[in-house]
Image (cartoon, rainbow, N blue to C red; front, side, top):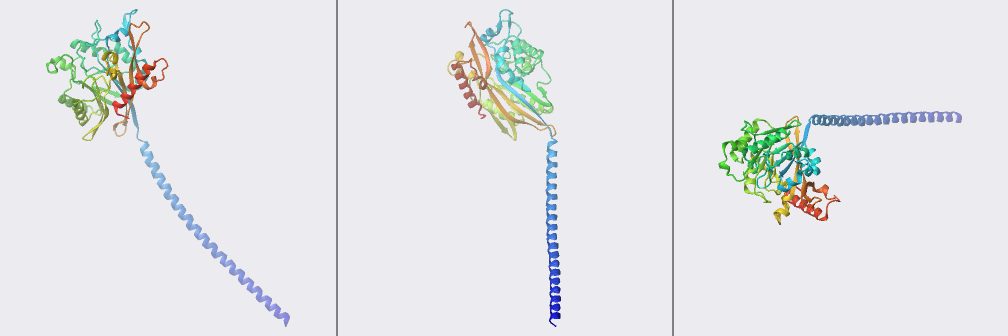
Length: 416
């Protein structure tokens, strides 16, 4: 009996173990199903998020692709103020052996800066009558080789409307324009004859720039007394005439409009009311760049906005080359030694046609006049101040004068 009971107990125990094992197995399967289900849900969620992220990334890539399809053209325009030829400069440029004049050395130090620009503008404040005697102030008449020097320096556009345009009468003015063109440069402001269009169009790397130049005064002449022929060969500063010219310019669909004005008062460091009123008028008419000369000193530069039209104005770019200085004008005349290369970076969107001024930079310059070896005459060099301050050949006095010029130029321009 005991043996049977033991067998019965043993059988029951085995059944219990089997039951517990099966229960454990089923529980394990349930847990696995739960874990697998949760894993699937997590994976599905991650896949959805990944697809969403991929879609967003693709959208951004498409946007970037659309932006990158737009192309732009960039050019740099450089402009300077007055180039004058006084008597001492004539003596400096004269070569007795060849009986000729060479002004190129004066431009040697700034040649690279001008040549690197896509469009470079200078005001030539002398006439080229073609006959001697060559003279400086008050009646300017220079050798043709001054134009060779401008071309050597890298200039391609010469402003010929200024108060000295008729110094050698209308024939001298006409010949001045003719010589400039024959030497491969463009002239703006004065003409050989009464042309249908008195606007210079310069197309630079696909960017079309319209240039119009005017002078407020003619030395020794009353503007109202000019003959019809004289009025036809030089642009005089006149509001109605300028507005009419701008309307004609707009018909030509330029990308940018530039005016170069000979205005203001000599040696005045502040623009007068005529200058500021004309600048506002020009900005309101849609002119983009307004450049000035005649005061022989640097005046302020800034952006002017009128009726939604924004223009950059440089009221006076000062003297780029002359014999005007402290030694010739007296105390206070040192600011006539100061000049500037105004660099204006222009960009055109080739898809939309929109053309804008991207940046304005400037290089202060100083006219260095020094005695030659025999101390009987002077030589001249236009120095870019920043890079010339380390010139070991210059005296301490010269370096200090350049430093003063540099600080004065920065203060007057007001572009910092």
